[in-house]
Length: 279
Image (cartoon, rainbow, N blue to C red; front, side, top):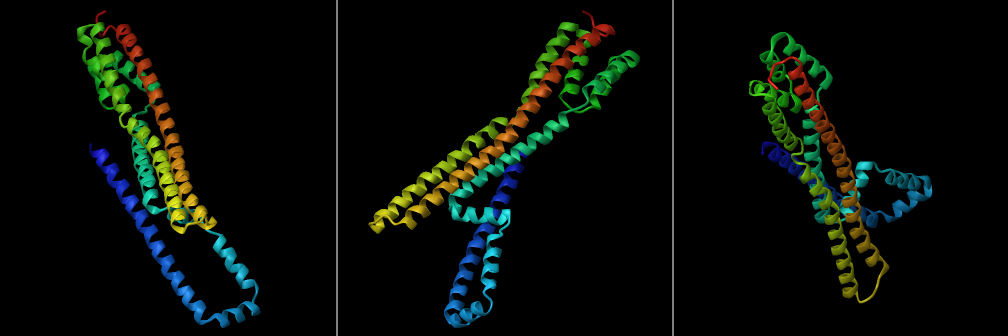
């Protein structure tokens, strides 16, 4: 629960921060446009003289405007696509990324050198018995070490009890590995749906503007379609990014589950080999 709350807090902070920056950019661009218009009206003759004297300055200014960074381009498109609907897509992306990063960190911490761990457990069983092997499991992180500990803890109850314990606790560890994955798949589906919703509403607004104007103006139609399509583009981009993380997480979980199954079989064979439990 604490991980979920912390992820939501991080997502909210990132979202509101980005939205404030976008709003500030809108305000600054609006005020700068007004100031520029005023200056142009007052100093129109001076500007014309400057252009005549230095015709290359206008071309250089246009090149500077065209050379926008990737982040600036994203902010510009975010504003053009209506910040209200783009914010929903951004929230879905940020929360999905927060959950994905949390899962990746957890899974990487759960991964160990299985071959080295098996050798250490077998050496401990051979030299110090069950208690020494349990100490090795306690000092090792990950689901495989936890499964081994549960199996070794029931070594005096017979091999059947050990197998049942390993299978049951393996299911518990598998549930912990897959925790949060359904939420990631939810945001993968939600991001493009929110984008499509913004598209539909943008088209409706464009048609409303046409009805209000009483004519089909190219600027009105093109502006409405551009706004509506930008939300779809951002929604699809968010879904693609989250899908990549999702596939990596699923493959990582599958790999850990296979290692757990192989290690469980090795544990039973190891206990029978060193006669630490009865058949």
